Length: 283
Ligand code: C2E
Ligand code: MG
Ligand code: MG
Ligand code: MG
Image 1 (tube, helix red, strand yellow):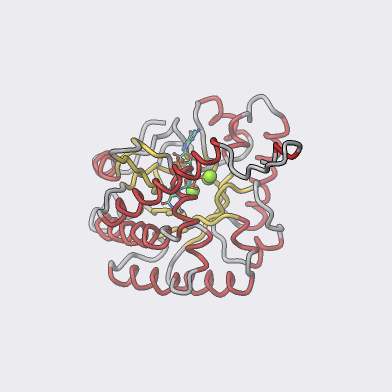
Image 2 (tube, rainbow, N blue to C red):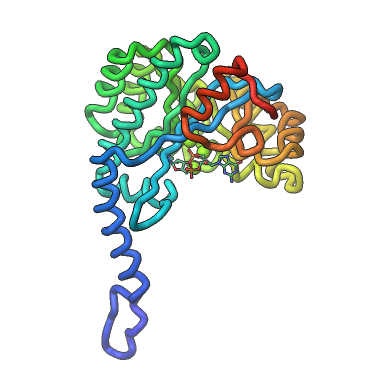
C-alpha cells in the first residue's frame, strides 16, 4: 500500500502485511516439518444417496500444530501450493487413499465405497503426477473405479492438451474425475463433453441459500439437468439441514455431502461405522 505518497516515503509493507508474511513463512517451516514427520491427518466425509446409502467419501487434510494450533486447509493448502510442499503432501494423500482402498476391498461392507481426494493445480502440473498415481494404484492393487480425483474447472483450461492426455491416461488406470466447486470457475461447458469427467460437485455457495434465493435454486436445477443430459453424476456439497436436503431432492439432486449427512471424521471412525452398518448412515 503506497499511502505516504505526499510525505515523500512509500511504504511497501505496512505492519499488518509484515505480520501476514511472517505468519506465512513460519507456517511454511512448520508445515515442512509436519509433512516430514507425517503429522497431518486425513479425515473422511461421507457422500450419500437420498436414502442414506453411503457411496464413498472425500478425504480432507487436517493439521494440528503445537505452535499454531489447528490450521484450516483454506490457510495451509495455499501455503503448500506456493511453496511446492503440495507435491510431497499430495503424494502422501494419494498413497494413503490407495492404502485405505486396499484395506477396504477386503471387507464386503466397505468394498463398494469410493474415495475422493483433492488435487491442487501445481500437483496436477507435475511431470511425474500420472506416474505417481499409476504406481500407487499398482502397489496397493486399488480396484478399478474406486479412486476419484477432485479437480477444479480452472485447472482444466490451464493447458488443455496436457489435461486431456493426463486425464485419459489416468482414466485408463481406473481413476474417476469429479469437478469440485462446480459453477464457480471459468471452464466452458464444451470441456464437459471433451474430457473424461464422471461427476459434478455443485459448489456449497449455491446450496447455502437454496431455500431462500431463487437464483441459487435455478442454478442447482440447471447443473442437475446439465449432468443428466451429459450422463454425469451430480452431487451437492455443503448440505447442512434437512430442509436443504429436501429442497435439493425436489430440484433433482440424488447425491449429497454435508454436515447433515455426516461430518469429516478420522477415516477409522467411518470405517467402524460403515463396516457394522452395511454402508448406511442416518440421514
Ligand atoms: P473442498 O474440496 O471443496 O471441500 C469441502 C469443504 O467443505 C471441506 O472444508 C469440508 O469440511 C467442508 N464442508 C463439508 N460439509 C460442509 C457443510 O455442510 N457446511 C460447510 N459450511 N462446510 C462443509 P475443509 O476440510 O476445511 O477443506 C477446505 C478446502 O481445502 C477443500 O475444499 C479443498 O479445496 C482443500 N483441501 C482439503 N484437503 C485437501 C487435500 O488433501 N489436498 C488439496 N489439494 N486440497 C485439500
Ligand atoms: Mg473437494
Ligand atoms: Mg468443494
Ligand atoms: Mg473449496
